[in-house]
Image (cartoon, rainbow, N blue to C red):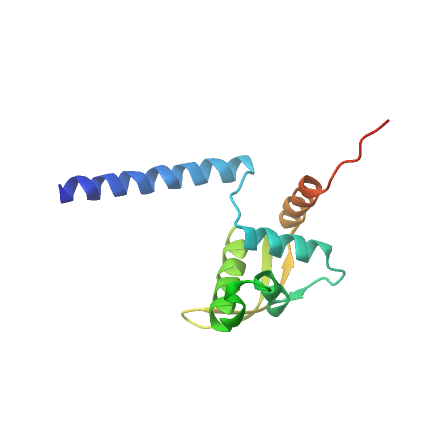
Length: 128
């Protein structure tokens, strides 16, 4: 039974990876709410770069508002993943093990995705 479960998990991982590759090739990516918030906030900002601390307000007025270390880690992970997807450029320091991101900016592809997100969430007025 254990071997069947392992085989199932391996096949499931392969299927997920294949789906992710197909979606990213088509230009369709799955983004979390935090990643969408980061993209939209960077897109609407007047400055070319944004600091990492600018995105902490996503957790404002929630139960996680007090857990500062958790918020910092999740925002940092989201920024790393957005950079890995090619939607953002990160500025900071790199050690042999980890990136320390201080500022980020949108790439051209990131601007296009953020523009689609903003247009999708914008209400449309009825024409009479």
